Image 1 (tube, rainbow, N blue to C red):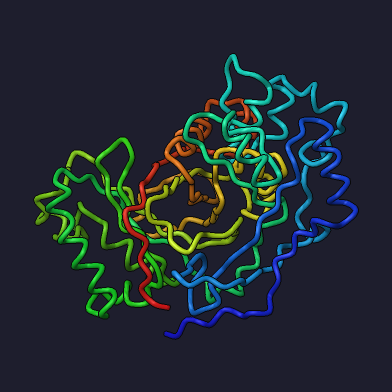
Image 2 (image 1 turned 135 degrees about the horizontal axis):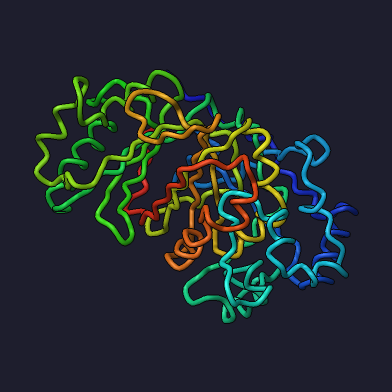
Length: 385
């Protein structure tokens, strides 16, 4: 099947010069002096799926949903006066504004500014950002994605698609590499299982602080994802015999496999992600994904994600099919892939993704289990351009 080509005339609009945006800048700077965050959004205008680019990048800007058309956001999350912001240091006040995935701030005996910005006090200009970096937690590389640089209209990126992959324990990485290399080369040549033939992009991942490995690939939503999930079944009458044949496999580590369909993009990916980190986060949401979006895209959420160095995120709805190992009693399973600039930023993000945090436990629509893995991106692979 042919992957549609990106349109070149779509614009990503963050209205940084609008009166409302300028007022927000003044209000924010009066309170803490972290600036209005803006960034140029780059997507590859070639044949790709949801969050693919290649080494050659040209501007493709996708219009974010206007604020007036977005789902209603909590007043406390978007309208905080300059005079009251400095007083918001208690856990109680933060529960309301930070009740979103990944926003359980690193709490304890730390300053209020550190609760809001674990990475740094963000700066508007490159020179100021360099100065602020000296004050940040060691190794964290903050970013400045704009408050409106997100969209749930993914039609410009082709048919619905999303990641498919399984995290497996690996006792011998040297023995694993030729096996996975053969599979990657097979996708490129077309000599692969039917469910992988239309993969557009993939990432070879290695767990930080553990021995798990994963190749996650972008495939069209639907039958390809369901068939791909079945590949990871390793027990029972439908078990894939492949897993019993792999000497490199750590059989004490349960396979964690998911497929999911993207429904929100925040920020933009770099031309190549090799050497950076993916944070993979899953949790249950007892409601519609549309009701979750305002929490994830709030100003406070953006500030937090920027502060730990997350320039790009994609939120997905988890596919319920045999082979999927993520089980929740919630109506919707949500999976977020965060691209993170540094291991230190990934560690800060993982520490914040805590169900015992007051910022999670007081939002009754969040349901476990909470699953997270920090991956080092060993290789960023383009299958089809």
